[in-house]
Length: 256
Image (cartoon, rainbow, N blue to C red; front, side, top):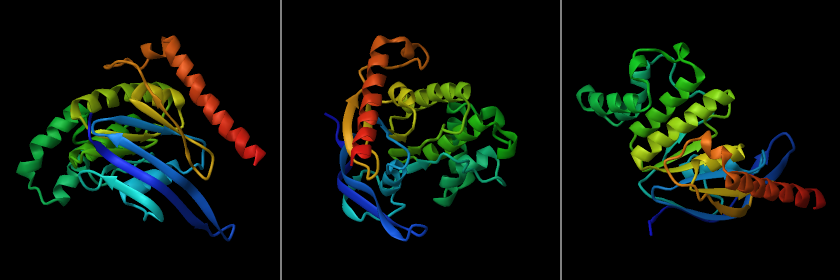
């Protein structure tokens, strides 16, 4: 059995809402673990604390209550919005973590070239972000996160702003890159289908304050085809089960 790359125990988190002039509880008693090399997605309603949870895992916010253990130091992170430096080329953006770590050009040239090839960006290494499509920018952001070579990669709705066709293509691309890299991935998404296509497990969260409702094991073999997989009757059954959990969470909130 694989060792845990991430362990979160009884996490609770609150923040102060300036507009409402009150404290808001974002997470309550959240516990889960992610094995090394596992791909786990987290789904839940808007405002349930998914992004807050990811920021806690990344060390971008302080834990108010509970414990987090992440192996291999601070994780890599891919955000939903375009986070490339506009004044740098694609190659320079991907190389940025290595340059910050003190690597000379002779040291980072080969690994960066390999990542550009892996992410389908070799022909655009000299392009600037404004010359790229949205999908290519997100591939460059993934390549940059991989360049840091951290064992854990956190992804906060990286494909949420893309059109459906581009999103499907990048889902397939991400699976290919992940299978080769062996990274541990925690992936936030609003799309139940996306979570099932990509993941080994799907963690379902409740309405705020966010709690873990259930862990759904995804039984499909790898490698996967993101389009063909949707034809499986089991895929429809799992989609229904997750939507049922989210619906029950909504009903419980309304009854409270």
